[in-house]
Amino acid sequence: MSFLCDLSLLSGLGELLIALGLAGVVSLFITTERRPILDLSLGALFILMAVGGFALTWRVDKLENADRDLTPAQQVALSKAVSRFPMAKYEVLTSRDNSEAYALALKIAEAVRAGSGTMPLFDDKMLSPGLGVKLIFAAKDVDFRHEVTDTIGRVLIGARIGVISDRAFELPEHTVRFVVGPRH
Image 1 (tube, helix red, strand yellow):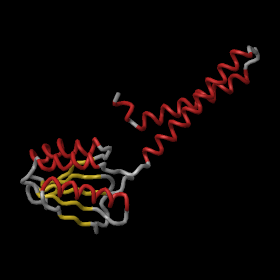
Image 2 (image 1 turned 90 degrees about the horizontal axis):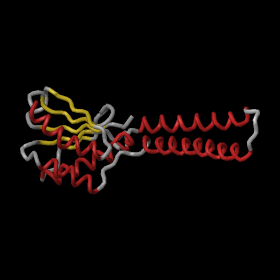
Image 3 (image 1 turned 180 degrees about the vertical axis):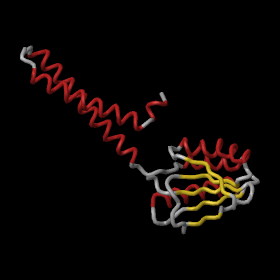
Image 4 (image 1 turned 60 degrees about the horizontal axis):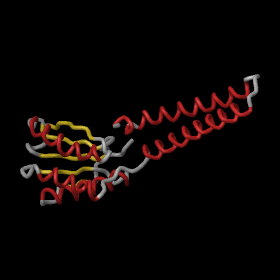
């Protein structure tokens, strides 16, 4: 049932329902043979299809434009994932220019603090954080990067927050940098 979580698929399904419903209603007006009960039944079905399609595309649009957020339970899950890496140092970088990304960065920083026992380096003066959430690691930390991405990345993905993993040569080993940018 995970295919039902794909918003682009649901949006396409909504558009298909709208097209089929409207085409069905138009076809009822074009036909020359009149069967009142059948025409009424099919008309109601086609209108319901079109209305359902409009409702589905409206809901998908609302979900696509919803703010990314961490519920208290998701923050606890992120804290537990962070606690699995006690030797790691954490950084959270974002920009105050985007209030949604800034609020998400604060929640991530709080979850990291709860999981690691210390407040991560928090910098909200980043000029261009890029899009989405990135986990950045030292270039040498290949195994560490995979472990952290598998645990912390899965928690964020489970919270419907897309994550990209990247490497940076200037980072010290066992450092996890969260870069939180705008959604799109």
